[in-house]
Amino acid sequence: MPFDSLIYGLVAAGFCLAALTTLRRMSGRAPSGGPREVHEETGPLPEFSVLETAPPRDASAAAPAEPAETVLAEEVEERDPQAAEAFNLTLDIDPARTAEEAEVVSLLDPRDVLSLEFADHPSGRLHVVHGSARAQLDTGIASSAWIDVYLSDRDRLTAEDVGRSGEIRADLATHILRIDLGKRHEKRDGTVEGAINEEPEIYFDREVASEIDHAV
Image 1 (tube, rainbow, N blue to C red):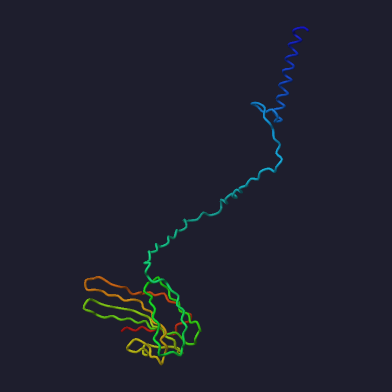
Image 2 (cartoon, one colour; image 1 turned 60 degrees about the vertical axis):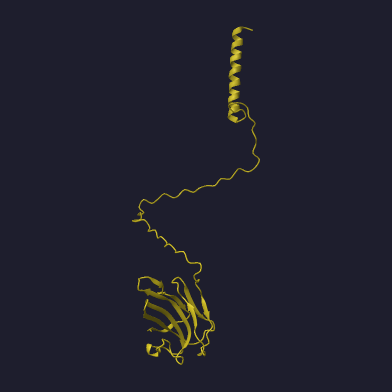
C-alpha cells in the first residue's frame, strides 16, 4: 500500500472517532472528564415550593403621611404576695333581715375589683352611702373611708335619712354590706402611715338608686 494512502486512512479514522465521541457526550453516555454510570430515575420527581411574587405597587397610591404611633404598655408594679387578691363577692341577700350586722369586706388596693351579685335576685333598689371620718389626734391627723350598701323598696333616699352614726335607719333600708377603703395617719413629723383607696372599682348587678355622702 502506498504511504500516502495509509496517511489519508489514519486521518479519516481519527475524524470518525472524534465525531462519535462528541455524539456520546451530547447524549450523556460519555461525559467530559471520563466515563460515568447513568441511572434512570424510576420514582416521582421531587416537589418544590413556589414563592409568589408580590404584585407591582401602584405608583398612584399615596404613601402614609406619618408612621403609626407605637403604644408602650405601662410597667406593672410587682405586687406584694401577702396582699389580698382581687375578689368577686356573691351575696345571697334576704330583704327581710334587719337585726343582723352587715358583712364587711376590704377594698384597700386600687387594683382590686369588687363585683356584687345577688344570688336570689331579691326585689329592691340599691342605695349607697360614701362615709368618711377625720379626727385631729396628738400624733397627727387620722382619717378613714368606707362605703355602705343598702337595699330598700324606696325609690330614693337622701342625707336626711342618714343618722348621726352615718347609717340609714333600719326601718328604711337593709344594711347589707360595708366596704372598708382603708385608714390614713398623717403624723406631725410629716410621715404617713396607711392609705385610702380613693377610686374603688365596684360593680353591681343593678342600678344604684341613690348615692349619699356623709362625713363623721
